Length: 149
Image (cartoon, rainbow, N blue to C red; front, side, top):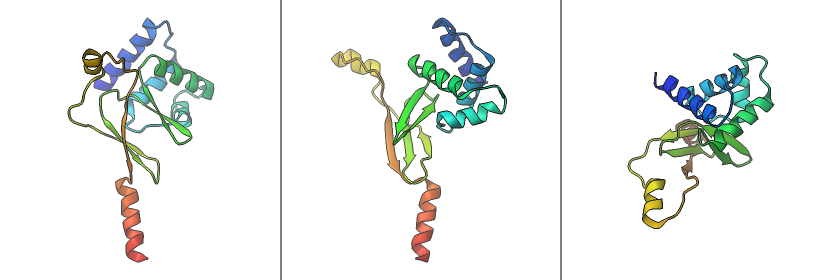
């Protein structure tokens, strides 16, 4: 039920910003709130097209732009690729330098943008924390190669 609530909040925010909620936008929202992955636009297109066959890649890009501009999702720029996530809670993105997989790691306490603004007057426009390394699968593969080599 939490996913449904999150999608409804995103829909309401889009309506308040003057955007219509089309079936295609709704399907894109459904996918974004239901995945733990950090998909790129083409991956989103491929997955949503399964339920919305008339979906165009341009619609995906336009919707991602609107969602990002309205602070409803975050865009992560990695190498030459943009990835998207709907988890706006403070967390650390664990980015595998081998396969490119991104995982969320729920972190403990942090200083909020509101705390920064109140303490020193700095207006935070965005933030992210990321660690780069090897995911468990790539590390296991590297360890196995090391043992056999």
